[in-house]
Length: 76
Ligand SMILES: [Zn+2]
Picture (spheres, rainbow, N blue to C red):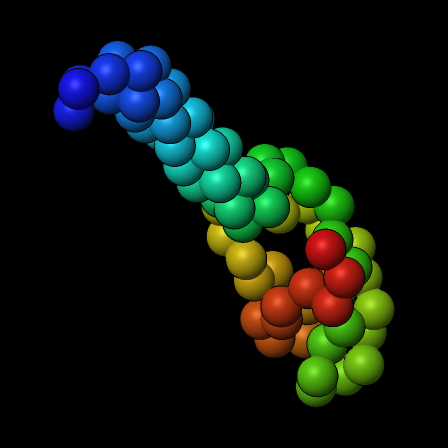
């Protein structure tokens, strides 16, 4: 009686749904953090005020074309 309908059907179904939901949540939360390769970002130099657009790959900071100061993108 203990391994009736609940044990043979509901438990495996619930476990499978739990794994699927877990994987979906895991990859769903990871996806927005993944860095886009070769995206064009806008930079603003803190030193000379130069605004410039540059291709960013693995590196997140790109030197200013006017003074060489390393800056982070203001818009991604
Ligand atoms: Zn600069």
